[in-house]
Image 1 (cartoon, rainbow, N blue to C red):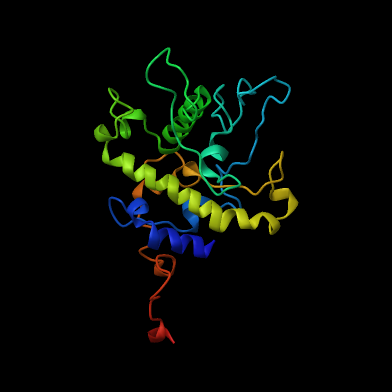
Image 2 (cartoon, rainbow, N blue to C red):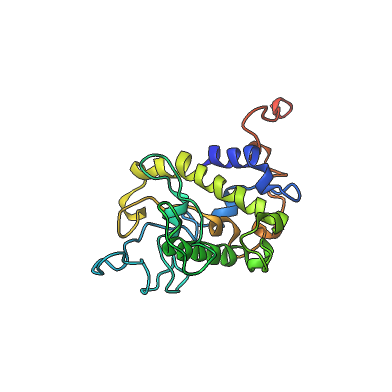
Length: 225
């Protein structure tokens, strides 16, 4: 966990220090708890007795923010598949009544994308236009600067899960693991942000903890010996 915190502060400053020196520490996620709030586990398929695609919906879960949207969007977009690839965040064709072509996004991706965006909004306490222009959600040329910051955040979470969180699978006791697949508790945007645009309202948490801000060139403590 210490290495993960150092990695975030040193290598992901474009996300955690986009506006000012803020950074993260253990408290950013844990807030005094052994296990942070707002962790998530794999829950799909939700409807196992439905023929065809179960849609992983119509049975509200915490992961779906208690809506009938798909509950598998976090595992779909934040966890790599067997080939180490991440699913594309995409929507169905912008035109109606078009012939589906091989490789085109399906309506399922549209629903998952909407569920993911809903998760973003709830995690940061914002709405769609915080990142997007409402007249052209699909146009990356009309987004706000926060869109790029959020995009970096997605990649950052993917890396932390792969390098630091998933390897804990064989370390944590059984009572810490998920209820369906006995998987490790995983982080995402809400784990840090907890409803705020910047975690802890942008408080600079690394000013007094330089050890958590760098991987190399640690402070010289010889004066205190």
